[in-house]
Structures are given as structure tokens and as C-alpha cells.
Image (cartoon, rainbow, N blue to C red; front, top):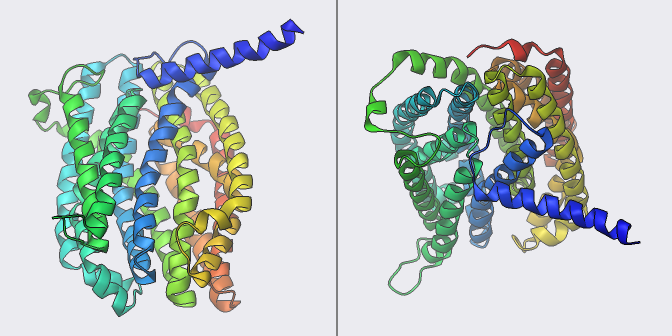
Length: 473
């Protein structure tokens, strides 16, 4: 009897020790030792990091949804457009993660730091070219997306601030990618903790007002989000330059290194295109929802997508662990260990996604009731959540496989898979179901898990072929 009790206690003790170790943020060598331990040490802070990122969207939609369907629709349409900025940020950060991880695996810390700074310089130049037009043409952007005039009038201030503040979005993603490549996942998590805390405090204050602080309505949500992210970026930069982390930037790294920039761009442009392809298709889907179901369907869809992303992003965080492990182990000339780490990560992701699928299917009405009391909006949201989460297990597998390619620097393979899966399958299927077969928004919802399942199967087959192991960066 005593033996039966001691075994689980011992396992719980080891698990607790691993969790503590992962959250302590200690520098680890992920190119040796237990693969299971390496995955857990990286995955826990990376999953929590993505939870923090999803909290941004949840906090905004919670407060904004109480301002009415036009405000909710405006936020959703703006987020659909700003995903193009997210795509650029994720693409450049993926290149930085792959190159930094490879240099860390080679134990070349000086080049890892140089790569990080050059990525930051690239991101700043690109974002400045996006922010100004986004601010000026905010109303036109909403109009092109199909927003009603009442929604444009109410929400143009929100769109202007979010588009104009794209630099902090870009840097927050990118610098966390640098930390992840170095295996410093806890620092990435801390920066998002700080940014989220500021956003959660500022959102109700700036939306509703308090004392001398005026009520800015939906515009206040954009102000809170941008200020919160800006504070997170300042925190990141402090730790990059204070000389106490594995990646240590100094003023000498501010000099432009064209060879390093070319290496980053060679990996970043397919990675950026990879996510633009995906986010572009989501823009089309959002537009199909609003044109076939109008503001009720659009508001419900935006609430549903935020609920889905809240649970999907932790799995993405877990897949980021695979990217770091692939990059560092390829740098250490251990391709078989890199492959084993990906398979182990995929198994853990499947377990997590299966649990989330059951949870959302049962509790979606209760969860959505916190965000809207409008019956029509809530019904669309519940329907969308239940249909989209049907493919959650495959989403998880696909994310891990794609990030394995990206971590190896092979960003072109998942780009091609996304192009075929989203634009030659998902978008036509969504149009066919929603318009031709007149299923409306439900047809759009159905196209999502069907296409994502096909994409995941294709990514797994290509991963097993193993050509990514030969990629030089």
C-alpha cells in the first residue's frame, strides 16, 4: 500500500520541481540530457506567454463588447487587418528565433546577439512604413472590410491608434522571439505579464473613465493596449542591454551588418508570407461572415475567434518550444535529437488540445454569456466555437510541424502548405458553403476545421521526409 502511494507522490514531486525550474528562468543547455525535460522546461513558460498574448484580445473584447455590436465588430475587423502586422512581426521573429537558436546551439553567443539587433533594426524600418498610412486611412480600411457606417463613425479612433502603434506590436513579438531562440522563455513571459497587467488596469479606466480621467469609449481600449505593449517593449529592451542575459546587446551592435540582414531576410520573407497567407485568408473569412450575416454574425464570430485563440495560443506556445529545440540541436549537429523533440512536443500538444475541445464544446454558452447578452450574437458565437474547435487536435499537430520547419530555418515549406491549404482550399470552400449553398456564416465556420485538418496532415508528411534536417542558416 505504501509503495502505491509513494510512486505518484514521487512523480508529482518531480513534476513540481520541473515547473519551478522552468519558471525560475535559469539558463539551460537544451542540446543534451532528457528531451522530455527540455520540452517541459521550454513549453511551460512559452504556453503561459501565449496565454498572456491571448489575454490582450480577451480583455479588449470583454470591455468593448459591452459598448454594443458596432464597437465589437469594429475591433474584430481592425484585428483582422492588424494581423498583417502580426504576420510581419511573427515572420521576422521566426527568422530571429531560428538564427539565434542555431548560433546558441553552436555556442556562438556574440553572433546570436548581433543577429538579434539586426532583426530589431529591420522591424523598426518596416513598421514605420506601415504605421503612417494605417493611421491616415483608418476609415477607408474599415469601409473596405465591409463595416457599416455607424461602426466606422464609432470605431475610427480605435483603428487609428492600433494601426499607428504597430511598432510596439512588432517589437513585442520580435524581441520575445529573440529570447525564445536563446532558450530564455521566462523573460519573454515576464514582458507579457507586465504588458498585460498594464492593459488590464488601463482598459476600464480609459474606456469608462474615472475621476479626472475622461471616458474614451472604444478609443480607450486601443490606448490601453498600445500603452501596455509599449511598457512591455521598454522592459524587454532593458534586459537585452543590461548584460545579464544570454543575449547581451551593446551600442556596437547598432552598426548595420548587411550579411546578417540578408540572412534574416532570406528566412523572414517566406515566414512573413507564410503568416500573411494565413491571416489574409482570415480577413476574407471575416468579410464573408459580415456580408452573409451582418453585424450580429460578425460580432458573434469575433467573440468566438477570441475564445478559440485564447485556448489555441497556449498550443502555439508549446509549438514554439519545438522551434527552439530544433534550432539549437541542429546547431549542435544533433538532427535526430531535434526530430525526437518535435515528436514529443506533438504528443503533449495532442493531449492538451483534446482536453480543450471537450471543455469548449460543453462550456461555450456559459463562457460567451460573459461577453454578450444579445441573443443573436451569442448564438452565432456558440455555433462558431463548437464548429471551429472540432479540428483542435489537428490544429495542434499542424502548429508543431510548421514551427519545426521554421525553427530549422526552412520557412518555405510551411509557406507553400499554407498557400495551398488556405487560398486554394479554405477560401473557396468557405465561399461555396456560405454563398453558393447559402449556409451563411455557418458555412464559413465549417470551412475552418476542414481546411486546417488537411494542412496538418500535409505538414506531418513533409516533416517525416526529413529534408529540414539539412537546412543551413
